[in-house]
Image 1: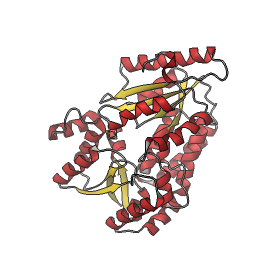
Image 2: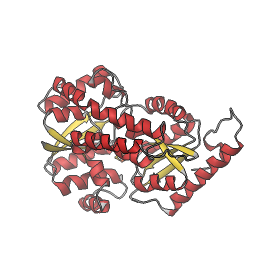
Image 3: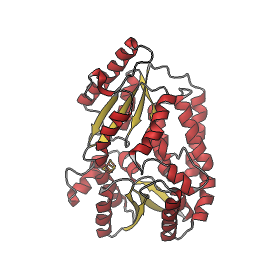
Length: 346
Ligand code: SF4
């Protein structure tokens, strides 16, 4: 199968039906032993200092690993991708734009799917068959998620890693299914986690993910909901590919994301929310809406090109967890734990 780069989650069933091996360029970038090296490739090419690290990392991966075809999501992810696409074209890569519609309407999604399928020389019908083939794999990701929040047998990092990898199934969905099935078997024989603070993580995956989850767990807390990563696993598959990608919340309005987030916070008995924002990312403005809509304390963490938590961020996390513990101790049933009412300016 020919590798094809993707800049974010796309209807991967179409790529597989067309005989491609999808590779999520974000995951390649962040799992590189030296991600700075990839960012520097972009900066040497002229990407500005104040451009998001993920965009620069994706560019660095494309050039470093010699990808010749990349699917760039031009609507529903990142406005920077439009210009990234132009630069990749300039460098001689074949770039295929994919645009989610403005609204999650299955009819509109269907026409975008058809256009993508045609440009890759396949059909939506063939992709529907592939959707059936991926069903077992996706079902395992949902089990993993349930084992995380309900049975308390999976760490926040493990949850993140498996779910974030479901954008491309690490390039080999059969192997992914085999390894995840084995991992879930191991998890079922564990002792449950018994932390006193349960957190949710909303926003794009962070550049310092490993350190963040590990640090939170060292503080006797655990992330039991990874919002965007869970969405990559298509938790509401619907009856067709068009419905599946209309139910996928990330590309559409933040209010649609809240319709997913708020019930999950209650269902998973979350005490506080970490909202990650990437420096120079337009999505950071959504913090205003999350703080207004989420009836729990929210800690906003910003990351740029720091792949480990800085001492400043560690202190903020510790203070947040401390505040949650104190407020839980003095909380009267029925009280709201609303956002900044505890004076924590995150
Ligand atoms: S973090 Fe924001 S700016 Fe960076 S690639 Fe993602 S959407 Fe774009």
